[in-house]
Amino acid sequence: MDALIEQYTSADEDSRLTRQYITRMEFDTTMHVLYGWLTPGTCVAELGAATGRYSLTFAQMGCKVTAVELVPDQVRILREKAGVSDIDIDIHQGSACEVSFIADNSQDLCVILGPLYHLQTEQERRRALEEAMRILKPGGVVAVAYISRFFVAGLFAQQFPHLMTPHVLDELKRGGLVSSPEAAQFFNVGYFATPEEMTLLVEERGFAIERHIATDGFGRYLASGINHFNPEQYDAWLAYHLETCDEPSLLGASNHGLVIARKCCL
Image (cartoon, rainbow, N blue to C red; front, top):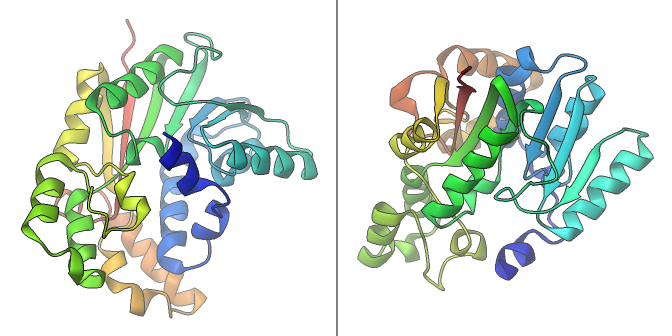
């Protein structure tokens, strides 16, 4: 836990989502997919809110937002941003695995866009989904993001050839972890899933899956081209991507996947 907090202390998550077209696509795609649920008055809980790129946007759209973030430094930045912009958000420092301060059956939408990257035990991952199930109203929707372990293997091959060892690849393939001290800290504190695993995790917690999308498609492998688009070219590529991101064959190759699922009414 301390290593994870250290990794994200002073991290600029807002810049990460906007500084390049290949990262902006993650934000644009997620907002496009969630748009229909982000109506004024909707109760939205974001577990793993970081510095608030999503939570602040949700609140500006008129949603009633509860933001939960583990890293104290990120919470501080989020509070400052909300204060400067005079945006009303209920902000808490805490873990996605334990949000007892959010009432049962109180949320229309629960967004978990970061925690599953780092909950390294199956028990923790299950607990986060159980908390989402608890706080959602009947018929409420959960959006769960993950990082594909297949993408990570490809990233290592492309950018970090010193990690091309049987041990690193076998550990990643079998368990979604990267413990090698030769890897950057982000990978050491990360958890990398398979699309099939995420489907099972969500379904076994009692949710009914509505969409499972490749948030980035294969765009990260085309970074040298996409990042040099002009605005019109980016818009054209984004429109193409949004029409194809439900294609199942893209899921493993995409950096991020996003599962949208509904809490079944009893």
